[in-house]
Length: 235
Image 1 (cartoon, rainbow, N blue to C red):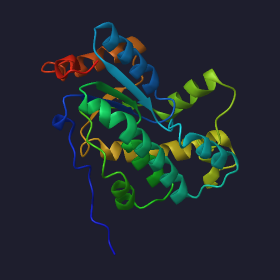
Image 2: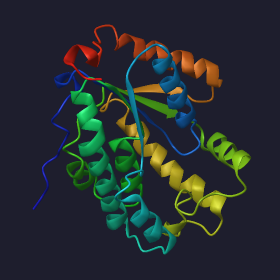
Image 3: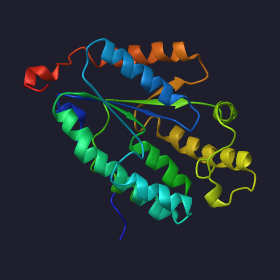
Image 4: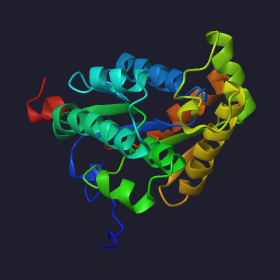
């Protein structure tokens, strides 16, 4: 049976909160930018909840063990991350959106789309797995040349991580070459989603300060009619 093309049916506009997410290949600098955004929002008195990819207390230990033993096929790799996301979504993200918080997510469903498709999973199947998720208020995509991403990663640590480089796919025996191939496939999928998913594209080769200025200006536009959750009786 052919799966019907799916999309998240919910919209954050149904809730008093806001959902701002960042996406990009490894080494794009998106984590730095969302951290700076978090500090800026908190300094300005906004109630913020932050979550990051693959961080569910229920799932992450199993994921770590499976990755270490190289037990994951592309399908199980996809499903275990989907379980992690679903756990965080139901227990943390959605309740905070309903309570009126600003939810910041370092990676969202589009990470799964890009990575799982790069590993050979069927696009419609992957999107159906995540069809329960609401659409973000704003999706920031940090677009970076692969050479820049690679240099940034290796300037911070001595070697690439096994799965980050796509070594499990047998693309190359050279980790750096495998990284470029795998992350290149991921980037291609991200780029193909720009229009369809309404990504706000940020040139991640700009300085950290210049990028943050752009990010804040984008976010400000979506806070004009924002109402603090204290109005709803939430702390």
